[in-house]
Length: 370
Ligand SMILES: [Zn+2]
Ligand SMILES: [Zn+2]
Image (cartoon, rainbow, N blue to C red):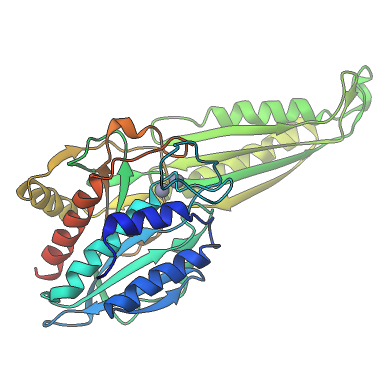
């Protein structure tokens, strides 16, 4: 008897692994796929890419169902019977759910193969790592011989009740980039202002200028500031780190230019040097509008409750797929009692497993057979 979805999820939950360390997870998934006789291969280091060909149609036309498999560095405190056995690591983002629902949907699709074209199931590693699994998957060009008609992913959402599925056609989630600045001046006695080039004041001005970039479609925050002088010593150098989020790829690159320009202005104003390091993270998640509306109609006809979602400033490496292929990323309700994601008490309602599996299965069939 193949493993059921709940058992699969609980196993992953007990044995969480961090980004790019999902070795046992990948082995477990491989074993389950082998039991079912499903063809697969490793991808992006610790990921698994499974493939099922339909009974008819053009086999070069494909749909990719994607789930993440990594956990986060949190010590679980839920106290459930299937709680994490790995000290300081927990499936606190619901990726155990996602992988299990993908397994369930894949199992159903493989059983009948009653569809046109090819189905890929992508168990993707390292979503939580910047810039992680999705970029690595795409760098291997696994779908280069195929016409990808849709990449589909889902995420557990504790703002929706079980049975509710949330959609946001078009722009959905923000891009993210990490910012780091090193400001170098001339340190010295804090009383001798004419002898120092004050890196602390320059950095403070820089942070204020960055803060002015904030608006409805652009978020800049600085969360780490280091200036290790003393009450009466100005340090030689100081550093700060922050992040940039936007909802538009064009705006994203313009704001990065603007940040570099602001740093140059501050260098000139305070006679200091500033090293700017911008580390690229995830692109925006943009949902294909037609795919979104079709999925909303399908969800409704399957008896699930369709919820409209607003654009949200969270980020997801699913954005990498959505910039290349027609894509859909939707939210699966796991009940408000689940608590917040990325906390030690996150406990999604397992009744949602059936909803997520069923809908992913139906959606894949409907897109493949169109
Ligand atoms: Zn997460
Ligand atoms: Zn996540």
